[in-house]
Length: 237
Image 1: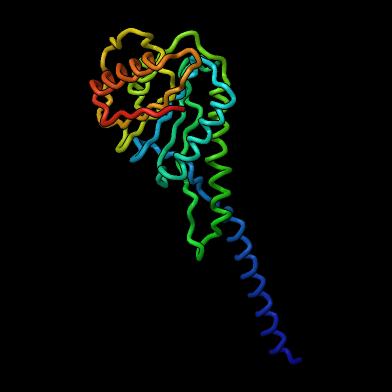
Image 2 (image 1 turned 45 degrees about the horizontal axis):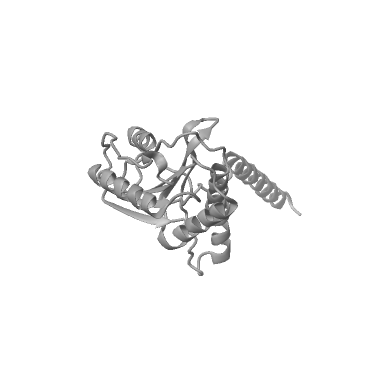
C-alpha cells in the first residue's frame, strides 16, 4: 500500500471514530422516553367526573361489599367514558378524618384498535392501573369501622366547598342507608347541587321497614331537588 492510500485510510478511520464519539455523546444525552400515566388527573375541573360517596355509618356485610364491587364493575363497563375522572370518598371514621378521598384517577378505557394495539394487553393495563385499585379502595372503605352518626349533609357540603363537584358533567353516587333523617324531616340548609346528577344506592338494613325506607327516599328526593340537582334516582344494593 502506497503512502497516499495509507493517508486516505487513516483519515477515514479518524473520521469514523469522531462520528462514533459524537453519536455516543448524543445518545448519552437522551433520556429514556417515559410513557405518561393515562390515569393521571390533570389540573382543573374535569369535563366528566363521577364522585362516589360511600357512607360507612353502619357496617357492611361481606355480601353487600361483594354486591357493591359488582355494581361498580358494571358501571365501569357500560357507563364510564374514556378520560372520565372517578373519585371515591369514604364517609365514616377514618385516621384521616370523617370524609377522606381514597381514589382519584382517570378511566383509561379498555377498548383498543386491534391493528395498533393488543386488546388483551390494553384491557389488562386498565385492570391493573384503574379497576383493581378502585375495587380494593372500595373494599377497604366498606370494611372500615363504622361511625356513630350519619353525616350525609355535612359530607355533601364539604364536597361542594372543596370543589369536588365542579366540572362539566358531574355524577354523584351516594351509597348509604339514608339514616340521617331517622323518621323525621330533612331540615338542612340547601347547598348548591345545580347540574349534578345524583344516583342513590340505598343500603337496606335488617331492621328497616318498607314505610321507613320509602319515607327516607321521599325526604331526600325532595331535599336534593331543592338543592338544584339535575336528577335524582334510587337503587337498592
